[in-house]
Length: 131
Image (cartoon, rainbow, N blue to C red; front, side, top):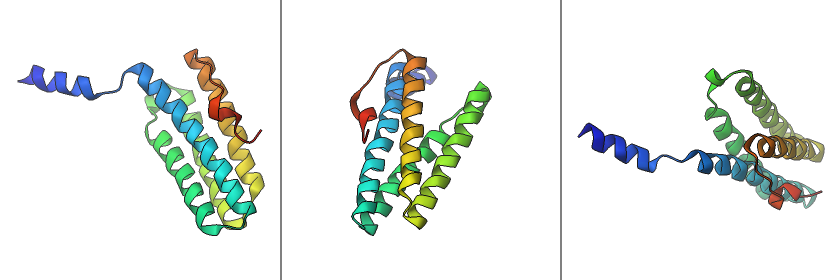
């Protein structure tokens, strides 16, 4: 019985390769939503701006909550970086600050580059958003 439960759990958990792709997909989602939030700001579409900023914040919250802080300084650094980007998103939302969105885009591009270096992958795709 215990073996059956373990096998069931093991079959539903993500493989390391899929986890690496998932993080990259989340970063790329941030870029897509940031470009849309920026466009909504420029068009003075408050409802869409708020929706896309909330989506970006939710991704950063998910990334932050999935960190294993027992893995060393990089996890602590990322937690602080994600918190800073959430703060910048709040500021962008309140002040209609396109520069804050641009900062989130720049930081996320840097995260994608670092993630690709760390995992040995190379993607172009959404990391080219709004260049």
